[in-house]
Image 1 (cartoon, rainbow, N blue to C red):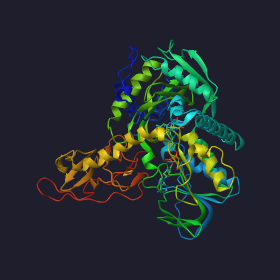
Image 2 (cartoon, rainbow, N blue to C red):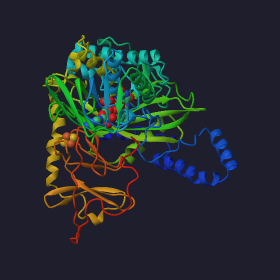
Image 3 (spheres, protein in one colour):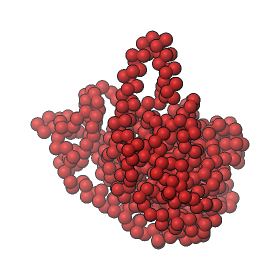
Length: 592
Ligand SMILES: Cc1cc2nc3c(=O)[nH]c(=O)nc-3n(C[C@H](O)[C@H](O)[C@H](O)COP(=O)(O)OP(=O)(O)OC[C@H]3O[C@@H](n4cnc5c(N)ncnc54)[C@H](O)[C@@H]3O)c2cc1C
Ligand code: FES
């Protein structure tokens, strides 16, 4: 994902008469079906007839747009029977903190080498950002190889490509070897000149990709509307898969080899003592020879790594599309942020068309509806065969200042290893990281370790470093600004806002039933000022990417502790208090 985000990039470049008014059409599909469904479902025969009609129309009963954030993958439960950790004194070879693709892949590489692994996650297994991916397995830098060469030179960029390509090979090998049914497909990737832009990026990228030795072909046109004359690079043998089906298979293999998983287990401390690592959680402690921190944003580091990367929110949506309407391939354009398109097999006669883009720095915009409208208009312009919207979701990626992740020994530690900085390529980064960290722990040669070394300094990335760190400087100045609302009585049901009270800022949310939640607006990582995210119904921290539920529970690291409770006074001086009134919430966060 790009570091330079241009707000113009989310505006569709070439609206076509074929593009229907975006959100109106989305809502119309949802509305039509929701109002028809109860009428048709009152009698079993009526229900059957309705289902037959809908099936005939290629719709699927459970695929109508849900306005909450829910990805295409989330219906697959990766490890539904695991339990939280309980009790002290457990020992193992390696504790892995974080059960996303990085943590689970690392556990797998160690388990097949007879290491006893325990994997801990504060939520569900594979319920973090991995459940929100779009699953392109891309061996080349998604910020462009030309950009990477300018920061890291040809040799490091060649090693980067080699390592990412090896990650795709490794996923292919594992799913085959372990017989994991996960829709893995080798596909061509097409980088296409965005509409109304010149072809220079394509020319520069062709040269750069040749320099790192990756296979690439120049073409004109792809089979998407208005793209017949666009300059294109074709990259053979890229890939995609269903990430949660793949991880469900890995978890079963790891458990079969003696490894164990614990969900709903918050890791609070990771310390080195007498040559061992002690991991303290809310449910007990574990002692191990080594620990791998694969929490997406590292919880062992307060500043060193966090200042070398920045959190970006990114958006994706899925449509149903008749099978064969476009060739099964991976498409993305040269805009910054770029749009991308890929397919996921569906049942019956439709597939899912996944489209994404619209990135912005985390916490710096709260306009998801507009971004989805722009994405939908862009999609309908290029792919008129796209039908109804089935899913919409967003998530966060951590862009590093030189485009590669930070993987290896945690700076200053002996037996603690870290994995972070997915840079929009967290699927392949997760697997590269697993190969590197498992080799380091097992005392073997770790190819590509230099590319990802957490303590590296990239002088050429200094301008990115300075720009990204201005966020924190600007953010602390927000504590001096007035609140977004003058008084908590003005807070409408279903809305969140920052309210000033004396010297402090309060993150207040009133749920649809009227219950008020009031928490300190200071992030518990290092105190940055939180921003409301109305689409995900959570508080985002623009500095290093923490997210908090409306009751202050951390949802995404690096924060570990919950937001402090706060009391609010109304304009008339009455005490409103924290968590007052209304019904208890049914869910604190969307479907992770
Ligand atoms: C919309 C979108 C599209 C994307 N598309 C692509 C793509 O096409 N290709 C690609 O390669 N990448 C893509 N990415 C990026 C990729 O999905 C992520 O980089 C990757 O999934 C991150 O995996 P992870 O294992 O590092 O993190 P996660 O999956 O977030 O796992 C980290 C885990 O750590 C746990 N954790 C955190 N703190 C604690 C704690 N204190 N105690 C215990 N557990 C803790 C969390 O609960 C979480 O489950 C996309 C991302 C998004 C949002
Ligand atoms: S995530 Fe670092 S201050 Fe919030």
